[in-house]
Length: 207
Image 1 (cartoon, rainbow, N blue to C red):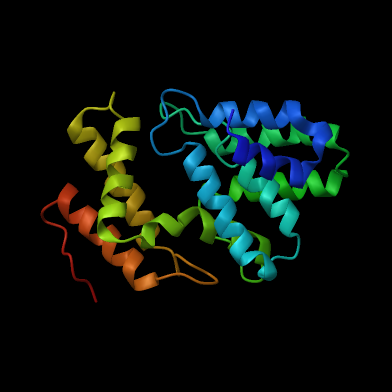
Image 2: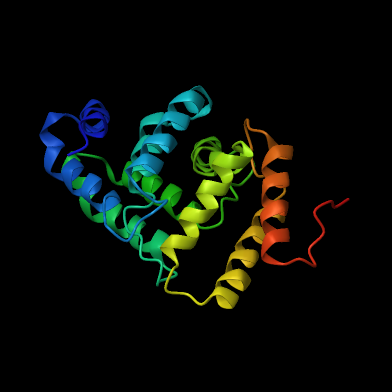
């Protein structure tokens, strides 16, 4: 058991919620995960803590971070929806009111597009935290990209390149990758460099 993560969970949900915390931590430890692991969860939680002053409901954002990749099967395209439904199923047992549960589930679903509406402070915090890896130093970003490829090792190379490139282009198409704070230029440079590796015809410099 990851003692550090369990400590975070207890400080958020209380000592009476250990069973759910243990289940969530075990999900992030599934053997098919290479990037969407407990390390990713801990990094997202740390970024949420750093941005929490911007959130309207910081503890609900933290709960959404716990659930945002709770269901992760790279062979499926509905992981965010399934993770949100898991939150809707399990959070009422913690005593959360219906509105709070709905907020957490909405935030989890938002990690499919990472495109919070203007004024959605909670969504901005969670999305910025989840995408923070994109602005990492080059070698850290390269390790992240390699880990994602490992998670999709069952996909033939050509198909992976096409699918991954589509994901990266959708990120570049966002009005902003980071809504609160983050190295926007650095993130876009990393994404463009990866796109150029996937598709040599893709220009690394764009207007």
